[in-house]
Amino acid sequence: MVRLKDIAQLAGVSVMTVSKALRDAPDVSAATKAKIKLLATQTGYVPDSSAQGLRTKTTKLFGLLIPATTNPIYARIVFAVEERAYELGYDVLIAQTLNKPDREDVCLRRLLSRRVDGLFITPVYRFEAEARIYQEVVARKVPTVLLGSPAPFCKNFISIEIEELVASYHVTKHLLGLGHKKIAYLTGPPAAPWAHERFEGYRRAYREAGLEVDDKLVFAAGSTLEDGTKAALQLLNEGCHPTAIQAVSDLVAIGCAETLLHQGLKIPDDVSVAGFGNILAAEFYRVPLTTVSQPKYRLGIAAVETMMNLIHGEKVTSRRLPAELVQRQSTAAPKAN
Image (cartoon, rainbow, N blue to C red; front, side, top):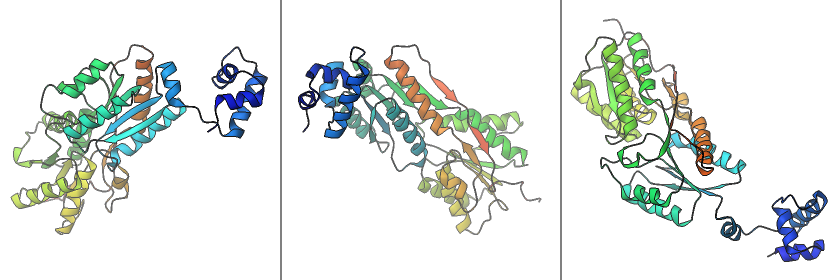
């Protein structure tokens, strides 16, 4: 392994000069810096990040905790966080909770043990008002940015989230504008604030149209394709016959749509279907899905910018980013009776 001492001998300078040159210290001439950096490249020198961390009391590491790497919603967010972190000279340690509180505890403690300079967390939502692991993060004073809605147990942290309620409201308004009055809604995880906001957007649009929400048209779903399938089967078994279905997410919407198509229904001729999220599958589904385009890349970039402000001790506030309705072939006016 090449050491600073080896480069110093080749360059004919002191170890301190080599160290300063590689750190771009101002008291080393440009010519000497260029010579030393060329030698470092030619010899394959790799800085010892652990030793650097001990000197600077930083690790140049971020911890990123998300529900699952297979969830397409997080692909662009992870890409944005890692890309911006790379530009700033940071590496990102990624862990997944699988939406299990116990696993979240373990992952966060492992990231804390690595002395990360900051944490990006999509929380595992729960009904409890407190969660010990989040109290530990507060006690350690680790800069933390939530990727999504805050909840009582993580209310002390800055968050970057989407305008969930407003976006969902516009989906329902779109369906009402097409002439639908019997719109079923497939809800999300009961503990997730974002799911409640999306449902409230649906309710608000109904109220503004002078209509009452029919509880018989509201079905508990979740966040997966399987959840959408189960909700669709329940809807069909109960024979409520909505003219449109609004799902809490694209995965739920696609799971629902597949079930309807397998039952011989046509989308949107027999029933319109809308989702939320604009994952890649939504656009290329066999009936391209009307949905909400979340600014996932911008959310990731905004999260890193906020993190750097926190690290530098600057004042920051939580942010909500607007989302945009995307109309595709899965929604149309209802059939005339």
